[in-house]
Image (cartoon, rainbow, N blue to C red):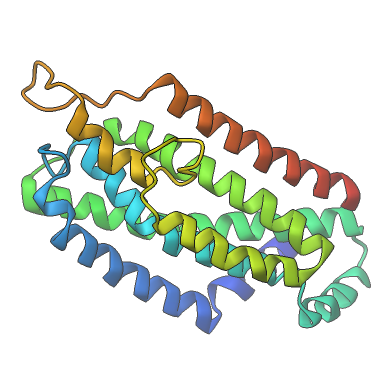
Length: 240
């Protein structure tokens, strides 16, 4: 099984699309950090949790687009041929499907790591900042719910009809660019919340706005995880 997983991951990691994506991710992260994040967000430091969260919101549309392209690869005609060849080996379709999903997880993690590592390098060399432990919460609340939601819904739609997945892609991109401040339930990708909240919260003891997230916002993230997770499990059950 490990050999098949390694083969599937190599197919992604050594494809022209993946290599170009890595290069674009590197330049795009540098651009965002040096044009927007370096100024700080909501009168906070560039290395505050609010500023880092804003960085994640800025790069998230790119990450989600890459993720959805990875998902489309599960349902192309070429993939059907590869699947038939793979299934001629002593491996069940259930294990094959799980390996395919695992390779997408790994490839997405590699792309995300490029953004995170470059941001860390930026903070170290520009501000001598190394306290990266307080970035864990923004990562969990900004990137994780969106990833689970888009991956689960995208996988569900693609398993029904690939044209539904292609229709879902521009919708996700439009929503990820919007700054919806009315409700976190409408602000699926948190961009409106992150850009608006620091301006209305009082200053903390440190002289900056503390990274406080409302209960409603946290509930909205849990709902995203629920819908994405439910969709993912339903697809998994049909294929295992």
